[in-house]
Length: 213
Image (cartoon, rainbow, N blue to C red; front, side, top):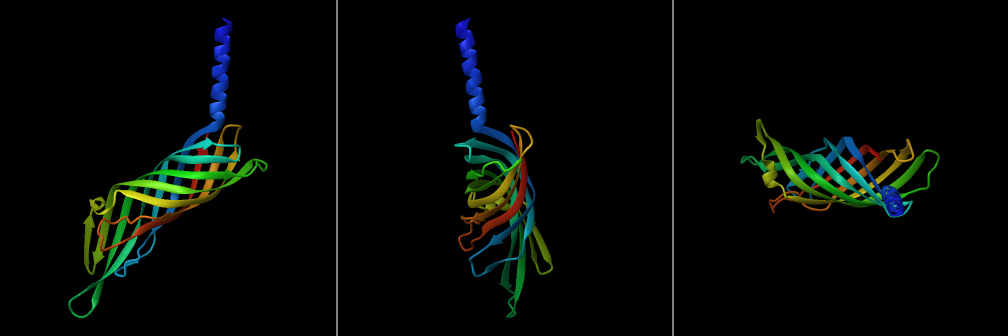
């Protein structure tokens, strides 16, 4: 009986220790501003595109003030690219391509928190987002002609890497439950287009909200 009681005590203690080191939750960015940036002379950014993100979040606490934040997110991003195409009469017609790309992303960031200030804890975080393209669509307007490519993901590189920087706050509802708000910026590192004659990277900023348990 003593061995059983001791084993149960060790299991409870271990589960409490594990709970203190690991947190799990949900996150969403209902409004995200996206744009595409190109260093190719023939391509220019044609403006912003709205998107959103949703998914799971997790944190592994290293200390009381430092943790590794990760998760699994579904992201709708993209932007507008413009290209001037010669019309054969000495002029040019601008083609506008509105691109929507869907990614599954695994973010890995270092999260640095302040001590609790009342009911709030403030934090900053930075790291990388590793994304994989699963769907793409392009709507191109060329003069009076509009074409839609619903399989545009075939023109997109599968893997995508971006720098992730965020500032935010946690509001402590209970001892183990927090509401989290983050303003973040993702800056793409890698080209998303397969065509070697063109290059474009994705960028976005957004306000995410979530809950951690």
